[in-house]
Image (cartoon, rainbow, N blue to C red):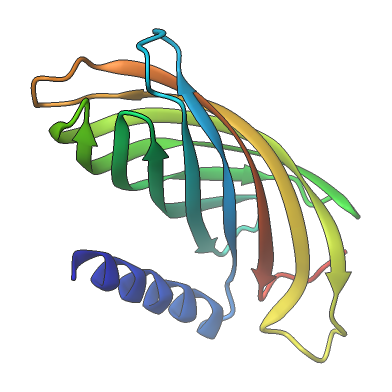
Length: 179
């Protein structure tokens, strides 16, 4: 039930920013992650949903919902951050910094919970389609390739550990004029 509430709250936030003339973005992606400390069994697949919005299309607060499954790690995380995006025509670099505010799951076959794990991501988004100016709600679609690092801060018996990730995402921009 908590996941549904988070998604609904995020959609309301996004609708509110678009409705008052602001802009935003959303993206859904999947990729691969593994740890930096080389504990066996940590390689996993990752699915992630991110969205952000605000009055400045180059600097936006955003949120994310992340699922990691594979080996000895099965976790669901919810986090927030700041996204810096370029607005160049066709290709837009971006970077995100933030925290995984809460992560719950199983690591090493035992319940795990973590709070406030930091992460950094960087990548590039490639525009794959634009809509006419008359359609203001969704102005463009993009594919993003990104990588990052983070640190899981756990409050259960499992060790804290760093991780890296690579992912491919499909996204769309709202209320921001495509160049």
